Length: 294
Image (cartoon, rainbow, N blue to C red; front, top):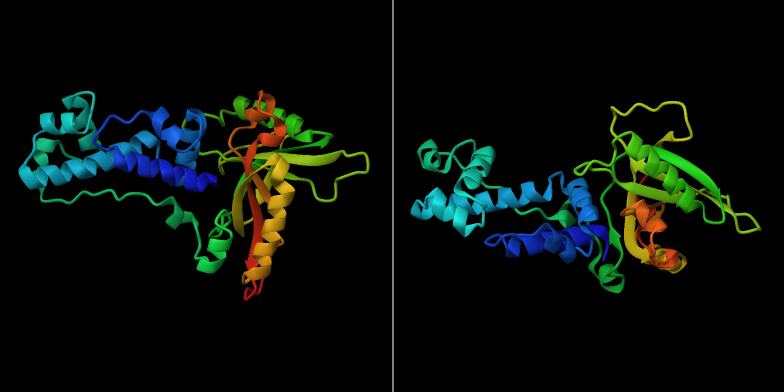
């Protein structure tokens, strides 16, 4: 299950439990992510923190209750498991602009719809192709990304490149709890040598305001492009590329000229006890429509 599907699964979990107290750890478990990875990736793909999303959805249903039977704040705070009436009222006012007791008199409408990550990111795909390759999803165009990048060479250059990037990210406050950073990597084209060494680039997204200084970490621009994505492990990358090739053969798409990408949840996993070959990644193959002029 790719990272987008995992976030959507967690959204379904949240939607099923809006009338309970939702533990972040439980939502993360439903996405098969640790809490740190989950909080960051949820924000990266939805533009909202998990807590903000939960609050907006609970207030949406609370508004319906107020309109239906004029439920008061005490009852609604209890029904939707807020820590107190005051906490509920504060979240209510933050989202609607009014206290619960004031809302009906304003003659306004408030509703925050359920997020569908798949609708936001997935492009239309042939049903027969999807049935044959359920793990491969065609994405809409990914916008241009500005990156801080570092390239290392060696037998396992991923580790060194990751270490440099994570140090840089810490020094530049790129890893804050609710930052929407994403971590990508790729093997340097034509870098594999007969002795098994090769080059690998690790990069982390940065905003337009980020200023690069002299040093080993350089700016990298990943241009806008369309991809197909699948989740795989390091040991199964070659097998997944073969499935991509078969997908291409049967689809209306060609291999694109833009950069292929591997997306990682957190680089730190490369330094932990998890066997390197078992680490999961999202693998992105660049594609272009056969009808495209590009």
